[in-house]
Length: 525
Image 1 (spheres, rainbow, N blue to C red):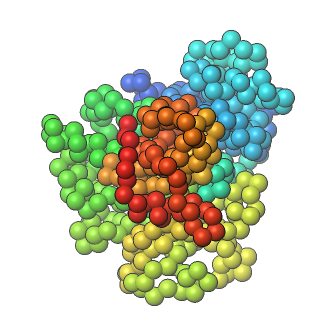
Image 2: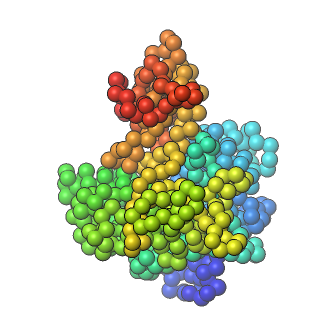
Image 3: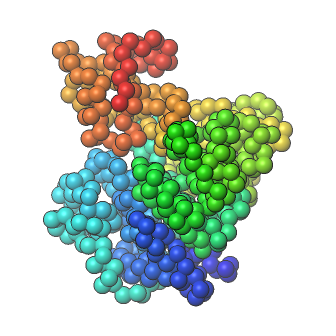
């Protein structure tokens, strides 16, 4: 691939035109259907032309509120080819949060799925701006909504000349924040192309690999599986989720999956199934994990399922995609470590007042590299908290706000977070956001949300709830109401009913005291 072919995120797909033999190679398998690189290029160019014809220009944000489907894959590359910015939104996102993201980002277009029309249709009635809406699947009976299939079929295969350069925004990825409102992480073509190249380098991947993705493309770990596969000219087996493992296993065997990315929840499910009936995937050569650290004992057991796989422990955050990785050969030599800096980057620990931290002591992790975000969309205050002046004039480094130890060889060991963000099922959950949503419910007087250790989820979301006088709601009833208000991964797995919530001296809810209090009534799903 030429140097020109790696400047922009979608150049890897465009480069497929230079390799006629690749045009017929499987690019993505969705619902068991094989789609070639030629099909992906054709469909993406047509949709890009259609977006340009409807007024989408360089820098416009296009929301992708979709499941893991072929139209979603096409949309990712079409938006980039049009010079616009992909704005992935989890399809579990409810109407109120979707409205905030569309409004905050100033989205120009929405590409979505018909089966979630009940969430986005009310927004169209309230919005007065000219939002372009293209819908895959069953078309809702509503004004100004176009069919995805018809738009692609009727558009000319005339890729727009958007004039994009590497410094332009490629993606705006919203992530939960401690303030209760999600914030948009700005990543450029340059930063994402670098990240993709660094990932495939340390994972030792090639064009013959076949990657599995059961994680949402709205989750950056899922999105990068697609970006890496296309960058390599490899194949991606894309599943909607891991809800039906037997179907996923059948596809893995049918298409020869060699790379299995997951989060601790998925690996816990695998081990549970393995104990009931042994699993073995000999063709898998790479197994990657992020979100929360895998226990060393879990890693040993996973070797029974993936006997020929290199197992990678990693740490990252949306603000720079990936920070570190542990070489598979060092799993036993470096127990508990999440590794060293990814290729082409630098990491170091500082105290709260910016002083270097000696090896073996705890400090705040800082990251240097081309993969660091530009900042948060419309949030200079939060950007300044995360992006700090570097030792080099004019440079900013990422302050992760997470505490680590580093040994004398540069390997990291996670100690803890400096905020109260919960990592559950591989997703970031803001306690404030959950609390605000629950306080809307009739009958709830006060609520405090915390994360508690959980073997399956990494952390479980626990809500301590004080009810209004005379209200007799159960934990199960509260959870049912929450399901209608927020994404599944945000709904508390545990409800603790309390007469009163303890307070600190200044009147705030004392969450530490809650965690130390004996639980009288704990309701689980």
